[in-house]
Image (cartoon, rainbow, N blue to C red; front, side, top):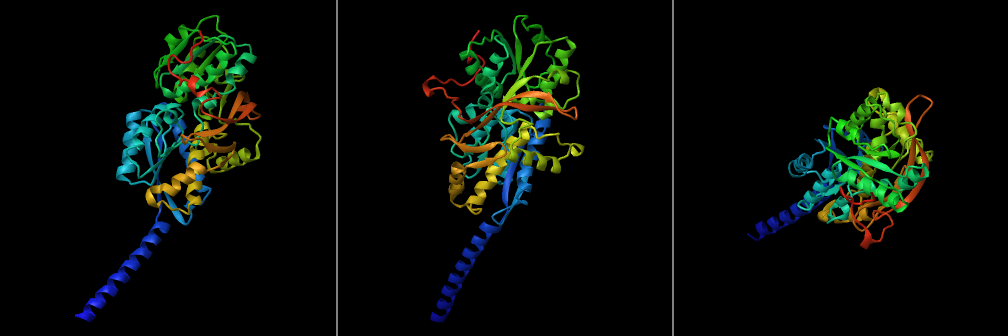
Length: 417
């Protein structure tokens, strides 16, 4: 009996040691499962597809591996509807058991996914492209990180540029949800302070088809239109405005002058030349890191295979967030143990070197980064592109406004009639 007991004890100790070694090997060698969520249906489908390309490019640049662990991407689609986005996220997290989720694309979706992330503390959520202020500024989630600057940050400098053009009265035409509210707030906070007036705001449904009533409301005495429409919505408006004989100069929201819109082929496309806008990128920026990024994108996703002449805004922001996910994994040697605590600390401390400059996070896990004021021009190939008018670094989410005076953008805020 003594021999038997001694044998059993040795066997159990040996088994425990073997399990410990196996567990360690599993932690180091098993694939990291990353869910990738973007809008592949609805008005932003083209942008969502390019967002996927940007995220995939970040993985390709690492050969699909980080710290000896394979990166396994599981894709899901939404349609810019928050409920659809949450259902897609729920499948990725609760059924597919992803370790990290990168997404979503649209502003309302981002707020909904942020709220959902609070119910799934075992998973780290990293934004895809959504740009609503409230995602990180209101009731932020401890496991939701956003490495792209958001819609209001993207518009810094455009108000001054509009005044410099002599646009003292502007009508706003924008989609009626959280991201355009942020864009309009970012523009108007500066524009109104400089004396600009916005007598009319037209909020239109996301995915709208008929803009005739909005076009009929455009006052004769406004100097320009601020158009914050993206994807198919922007194309539909531009086409109908052209057919109605519209000739007001335009200021563009960040997604209104992205490559997925600039590459549509309507006649109104050429009249976009001269449009000033602002956002996290400029197609013709001459920074060495940006040029290298564009070249890598073009090599992997040529126009003949569905890519754009230059990466769209969506490609850049998805690339940014996926690169952050991978860089932080590398920093912790692929270790996602302990409720991913080390990994999340690495994300918080990350100084992310990007094609447009360095990105860091604030206390709400929101990006502080660079904004470009741009102008649409035609390049030597006849393609529309954006050139840099000015560049603003270290743009924070409160836009330099004291916290006790800052108000999140809404249908009615700001207001300077």
